[in-house]
Image 1 (spheres, helix red, strand yellow):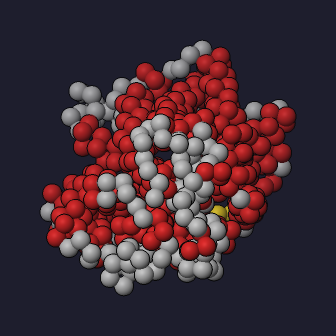
Image 2 (tube, rainbow, N blue to C red):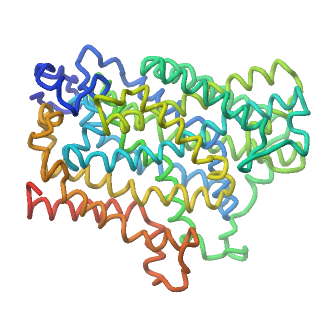
Image 3 (cartoon, rainbow, N blue to C red):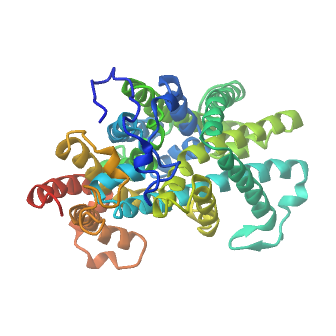
Length: 502
């Protein structure tokens, strides 16, 4: 069994013969522990991972939802920074097992949920990722569509045929970008790392160039940066700040709550614990705050330049008529969105679907399943309403992912003291079989963590009348990730002590 010697500890080779587990139904090459020779990610790679994934169009537009809710620019950017500073903590904690043992997220889940029960958190995480995959693919396809429409205006002419709320030219661009995503998936994990390293400086440079352009042409950053908060005294929402802030903060945590679970899918390739810790701590919160500020500042400038605020950077870029600028911008946005999408929304569900039947589903097939579900979810409807985007989509799934994070951290750090029997994680009848492959303790803790937020979620999506729900329960939904994490953490430890093998 590998040993741990702190942050300076070099990730060890897995000290058992893989022939012992190669024929297990829980094993395939994509889920196998990564040996020391395969650990190529240093601190710059993890910083690039987060700079690359954070510098994306949804981040650029993220502050718009908060400003639309009443915040001023610095309150919005600070809320985004705080949310990401919080979520990076469970991210670093969950990454530890990946680096120490070389195992991916679904295999890590077997320790707490059981060899079969691990499918529960894996599939919950996977379906959220499918939604995100669809959203990012739609955004990339929409960028292609809008820029092509500058060259061929007939594409955006009124009256174009449509289906399911999207025009056929938009759908064609969506599917074209979808096909590019699938091609990268079939190239494997090394091509993803290469994409991230290219994208990180590319999109930061594009954002800073937009910032420079906006400042030069607007003579400064005007209306939005000087706009008071709607929560200030005398303003329309005076004294309501905290009621908006905490749900918004939960939503910002939800933005990367998915990656805080499946980060072992990446940290298994880390050279050392220090590499993953420092790289993530430096790469995530600051980049999210910087890129959301760029979005706010450029949008503010567009109010001066064009007489209206334009939150979508693609719409800003289409105002440029130079064909060279447009083509370069389209390529840069496509590479940027592609890199974020593959790393954030395909690596995990591909592994998660493989967990269902490791002998039949490979990483590539899992990626294809992700892509197909991403189309079926009609992602253009998920992002149509900014309010629904935060309060339904981001907070809604954080109510499920928070409890999973609480269980995993409680199990690994408190119950097991960071000691895992890696061989048994791949054996159907090993110590992580529990009861028929399911850990009843983990399942009960998951339900206990998720249920308090259910009434608030059902009221938010209008499936029940909120007037008939206790205000306390409605309020809990605004803190869904925190409530779920804390309750599941505590319930899991109490039940595990009571019934260690349940």
